[in-house]
Figure 1 (cartoon, rainbow, N blue to C red):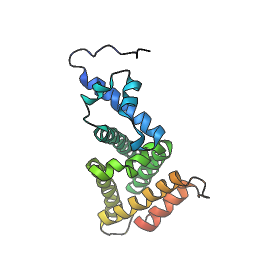
Figure 2: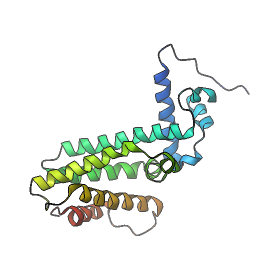
Figure 3: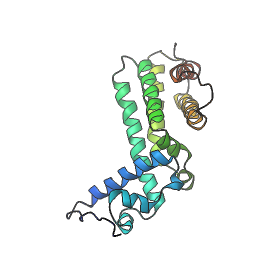
Figure 4: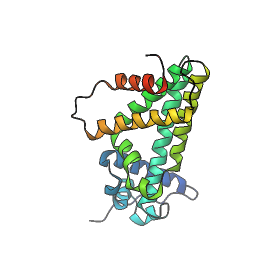
Length: 199
């Protein structure tokens, strides 16, 4: 049976096709929760193009996974930024940022798993993730500057906080049957113990 093929994009619309390919990869990675299980042929079928068309935009699967993860990370950062902007003070902003990012991870557990556990990450790294570290460090520093958290090295505190939050989220995704306390309560304990925010 002959495969259905879409019409070629008009001249100059190659970037639109690239975005469609990334969108399909993001959707599939969320379902698969494993970058090694992603097939370029399956992505091509999802977008109704020939497999060779994917290679015009991505030389291999790793490149496509990295592009998909960069988009997810940007969405995760934006989610935190929007939550923080609505908060009344730096402590509430840091808490809102962490809670929003945790909620995103719980809604997109497959993507979060790939973002933090993928083999692509081990092979190539994901330097775009430095943005999240910078945002968290800045948020912690604002709490310290406002006297809402004890003075300390903000970068170290931010790394400790991110380690705790990422570990908690990863364990909840990988071991969902454990008797987990409410996520908000656990995150509030991290903010109190690691940053020094009042509960």
